[in-house]
Image (cartoon, rainbow, N blue to C red; front, side, top):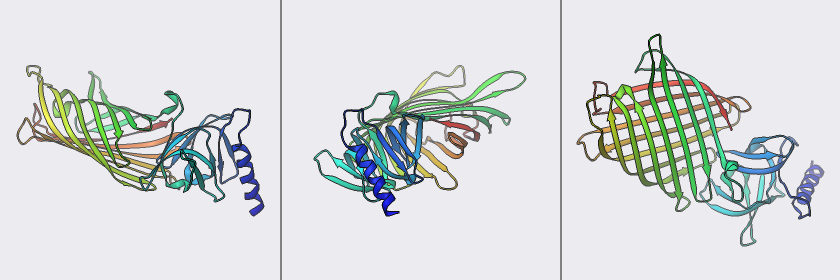
Length: 342
């Protein structure tokens, strides 16, 4: 075993040595497999590599024995420390040496990496996300419905960007109805390792709560309260401006101001079973309509079926103490579908 590990370390060291040939990032797995290509990014216990002979692969950090990069990276640890440099092979298994910008080195355990961002790559290589199709049940219709959702994430050294969309529609013998829709563009700017500024543009539709459309612009800030090896919790608040149109054809659009209080939680577990949980819960306190309080909550449960495909379950709740029209102020439902992760 010692000889095998020594040879493996020697091989990684040879790969790391400068040469006239184009240098490739490398990942050495615990099972002996070697992936050679370009490391793209890493977060929530996974790292992506564009393998030269295969394709884009997502690798669990706990399965990696050694790792080598030639491109400068930003690394955020679970203890919220941030390092800039390149990853070199370590004598300790499941560890890496970070060659920092000041030429010093730091040894870290790979599973303690919360986020890894490659600093020299093009726009499309930074994109990650998923796409889901399924069926659902919602209180608004009481019948089976078709659902679609997608999530795209894009990270840079200072910014974390996220585009999400979801839609629930009903089809019966008489007509097609788009009962609920949501499109949100979120951007967060890292001020420190724990504090960030945030902005969001959002479109909402919910016929059960008498919302034909709502456009929301939000600015604020937040904090990463906890960052652990397999979960993280963050909160944010600020000021939100809404342009709201009810389903009542005669009612004009109104502008409202709100103070949002949001919580975002992510959990992942890759070892038997492979599951991921993310939830976004938001309370809105109105400044223009006395006593009006809104709540939007959504949770995603993902369970890996085969390599890139997941069973996805998404329960959601929506509440409005003073909806613009109609008698219902509460909506709930659940979607179940198959998700493809890219």
